[in-house]
Length: 509
Picture 1: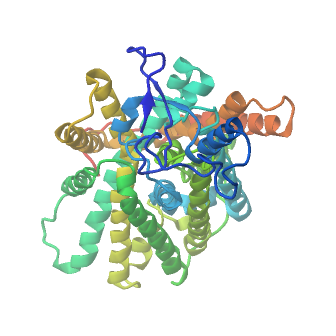
Picture 2: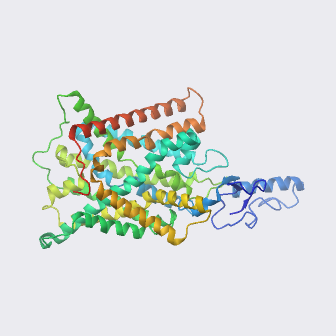
Picture 3: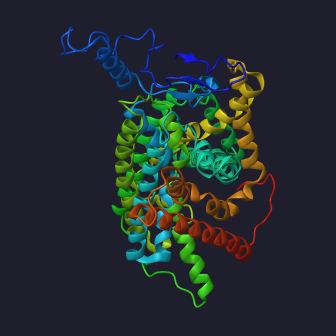
């Protein structure tokens, strides 16, 4: 990619370049002559127009075919998120599906006992279209400022809110969503591997089976091996596997549930309490379960950063095309799981969600092969999701290294970062098993990443006309998302105070 230093200043960290040259072109000067350049372009005679006009038309065609000037940090070519610019709409669909659909979907039926049928479906529908709108905002804001690509969520937050405020607002929630999700995936993946082993071996299991912590270690070792793939585009195949397995286990979970006889004591009456406070926080908890099922916005800009972008073919077009396909498939999974799971188990849904319900109520009715297959699909999905959620952390590690050394990471340094991160996540999951008790509080603090910040970013970057529809819509959704974040955080604090929290170090369940 050709880069010409501005003014020849050696200390300038950013260079003027055409960042989004079509994949495979190394320099604009060495590129093939674009349509309309050199002789007037296709369809025009060589003698038409003056030489000056032909030059202007050729330059216009070149800019349309190649792109507008963009300021780039050359170190972006060394980092996992922006190292490869060969992405496309298919990759966007794979990554978006893998990032947004996961084991949280199996917890959706737990929201309906606190809301009932009507409000449960209404709340799920509103949350779906709300987060789809904020995803569209992020896709459009990726290149909202001519000559600049915001390749990471924190970068866009800094551009919208200021360098310091944007860092404070976005850094913690995005790090938690990446690192916290990786830790949760170790817990879910390790426990599901243990359940898969128990189902497969059945009565033949040894009296001293592998412990839960050892299953965590097995899962982490597999995840660390897969994490050696160098960049975000290189894990597109894993994202395809992750998205496909998520669709399959979501579908299998609700189909197997509704095909079996319901428990005789099933009830659909909304859970009520004589205490207004308990009812209020129960409702907030239910809404929180729905809101937390929608994830992946902290990765949208990173996914779009893997695509080439030109003035004529901007990256937001294939990104949005892929995202629409992914979120259509997500809707086809989330709504049947929520409705079918609640219909099958009602208020008897166990805290572990659909997978736990299948094992608790139908372990003797459903063939062991189907149950084992469902568990295996969950494990494969967790391994794939670990990769895409860890990539921003790998990117941060390498950005710090390249910033200090001014050279790209060697293969050994890159591998060392990833092994260190994988086993650090394992250590946290084993050492602090009570972190799941803080999920409501931490989840409330991260909620604005999906539902509030994009709306405020749109107002700050696009500056819609005051009192216009767009102005009212984004202010309303942004403030409402912030209010929900505070309410869910208070609900998390109330849950800790009401239920207590046992600080058991190094004693996972």
